[in-house]
Image (cartoon, rainbow, N blue to C red; front, side, top):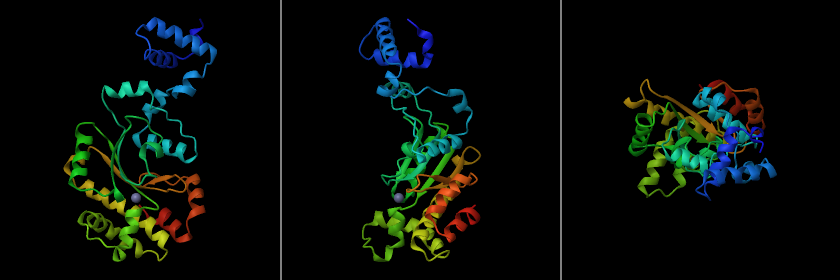
Length: 275
Ligand SMILES: [Zn+2]
């Protein structure tokens, strides 16, 4: 049989899959080869095998990996199928996530999806409005000290219900202390945004970004992040699927996409005033 037509990683993957049904490695490799001979894409289509590009990926910074993954997602070209049986087995030996994400609980902002990442890639803390208190800080401390995380990204998003609730707080019945705690945390960001523009949609987007920046500042006060971790904030746009962060320059493509959705004031804010 022609083994050389297939990459070692594909063969390893195929054999691992077949080992689910037999204890004999010889039998597994025979079955795998027979299936590959009949259909070379068998394991790609059925089990989501993706040829790893290990060297190139390892050389990238955690932020670059996130941004590249997000670019794939935004363009509808998500490729990370690292939810395979092999990957599950691999990460069962231990986790080595590339970054910690503090993210809103909103169902449209699932970090593994919007950054096109697989099982074991992201350490995620979620709350409505991506706000944090003692428990979340403790989780981050674990990620930094035990998992050796080097990047923390606080991610706000457009169309955030928690930010909207803070904006409309005067209308809300917030007898529930926990909910009003969330609103209280976001309120200063809303007040800040109101000072910039009267356009409600723009206020909400600016407030979501400002809120993420405030959470970042909160994290930076803690001893465990000092000199060990990069903490950045960003905004995810639920329409375009694009994440922009304080740590990168605006690319032409990002500007073009955002231009479609936001008015002149918002553009000025995003590209000139936000640091
Ligand atoms: Zn939200």
